Amino acid sequence: MLIQKDLYPENLHLAEISRLEESGINTGNLKTRIEAEIQSSDYAFREEEFWKELEELAQHPTLYNEPSDWGSIESLKSGLFKPSSAQIDKKDLYDRVYGAWSGRCAGCVLGKPVEAWTRQKIEAYLHSVDAYPLKSYIPMRTSFADGLQLNSCHPVATLGNIHFMPRDDDLDYTILGLYILETYGRDFTANNVAQATFSTLPFYLVYTAEAIAYRNLVNGLTPPHTASYRNPYKEWIGAQIRADMWGYVNPGNPQRAAEFAYRDASYTHTGVGIYGEMWAAACIATAFLEDDPCRVIQAGLSVIPEDNRLSEAISSTMKWTQESRDWLTIWEQIHTKYGHYHSIHVIPNTCFIVMGLILGEGDLENSICTTVMAGGDTDCTGATVGSMVGAMKGFKALPEKWIAPLNDQVKSLIINFQDMKISDLAKRTISLIKMGD
Image (cartoon, rainbow, N blue to C red):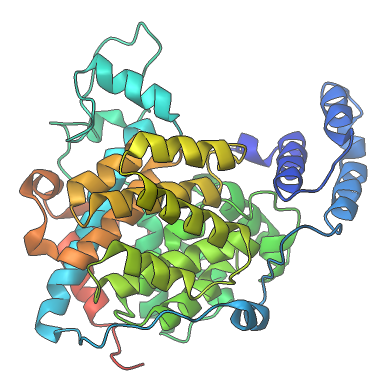
């Protein structure tokens, strides 16, 4: 079986040190000691010793109270958002859900070829193909002498070569959410999420926090311990990319969408990792009723604790968008304050989502292009922004240049969902909505 480098003991140790330091905990010389031992034949024998040191450090207090249990989260959230008095037009609901699915696919494909690239690297590549600033799917080059070689997915995810939504974990998880609801109903549990993941996704195609939770499940742990046990990736973006379905089936109800998202996230994530999914699900649910991006973002803030690093980052980014409409200026502010986080961490990537959503002003192209040009986990952030705008505008209002290349088709590795029409996924999603729930 292929074992990802993310799961090597030494990489797990170093990633946990980074997580602790990002939380404000002083890890002393532990990183230096581990790095010195990595080449030693004795490293395997010291693995448990290093974990115990890390677990002791994790008990140290931090500046923020970021609980992972539902009761504490509920007690600390602001709940200040007042939903619109408008009602969702049931005749329009299919168009909105179809738009959300399609916008998610478009944003995901846009970001795939440059996933995990820095802003500077993306800019350099786009200049090399005369496509900066980004206004279309990313063009492909045949020469990469300067080292700017697109990710391996590029043959099916670049301008002129897109004929469907290619398989991507961001869409696998949205489809998995549909599978969970069809299999277990709206009262699904975190254990059901674990069971569904285990039965539909091969281990070598899940990553970071999801891979750790999967391994913990195989070793006999159950949620929420699958998320918390020796999982240095539990604050990364993996839960947030699973948020969309919970918003789709709870249109106009951000509180219920967030509660669905909590059940899902608690299998793999803790703290701000959970909040990232709750926030996104609430935003998407609200986008069915609101066309003001700031209102959508505020709805998401209302369902998570007020005093935590993610809420602070979202609020700061909103403030910066009020002070400047230049995305590069805002990007610099985000990078200055949150650039020390890993490029797949939920905090900086959520900032890019917020920036793209506000500056895009409800336009799909402006929203997903601004978000993707910021760098980071670009297929994830592009997909989330596309989903929100698609829910706001509906399928009929989305530009043909972004939607037509998808040919209403998405590939997946979820069993029985390998080759689906996007429109059929939207129809199946509609059947799961329970208005007034």
